[in-house]
Image 1 (cartoon, rainbow, N blue to C red):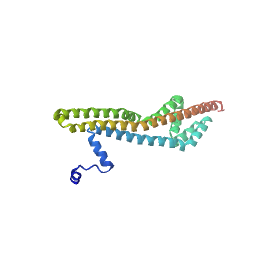
Image 2: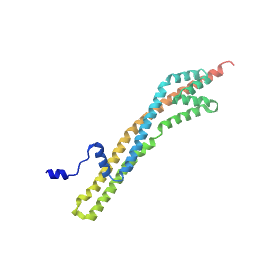
Image 3: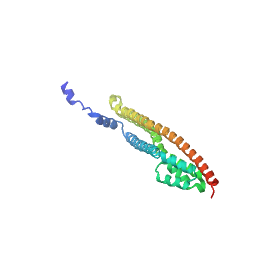
Image 4: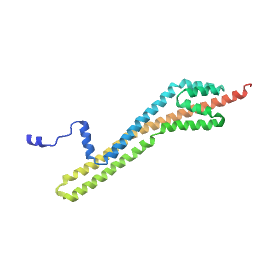
Length: 227
């Protein structure tokens, strides 16, 4: 028993060594799965920071938003524009763009500026969506290559050495599991960001609607005031 224990292969020590050994058994398809997961992770972290920055900016300059609406409602467009330029928040940028181009097309600029801010939040969604789709397909590809290796071993060695085919079967199972894990892990942040985008869309729609009403009121007051 002591002799067998001394000659037995050493098991991987630690979680990192076990993961590295499992990755090596998964075959070459594990590399694109790993790259896919790293890209998705980077995008998820970057998008999380972008949404946090968007929410913090709108919350920090919430009093400026009210001030801009009040000045616009009174017809003091130049003063409102100066405040919008000084404040760095998505809503202030939308208000400022609309006021800058109020002579050329107020509503068109207001809508275009809103879509620009939403597109900034939507950036990177395609990468996460692609990772959710591609990762399981890469896992299936690894399954196919593992089964092919299994049949190649069996055809070369015959049934006399069936243990040689276990490497191909392990490769097939590991890559399938890895692809599914990556897709599942990407699905949670993707759905979270989509829900956040819907909330921010509703928020911007309400802000632009209130600003449009304030602008129309300001125009009426400017037209009614004596010159």
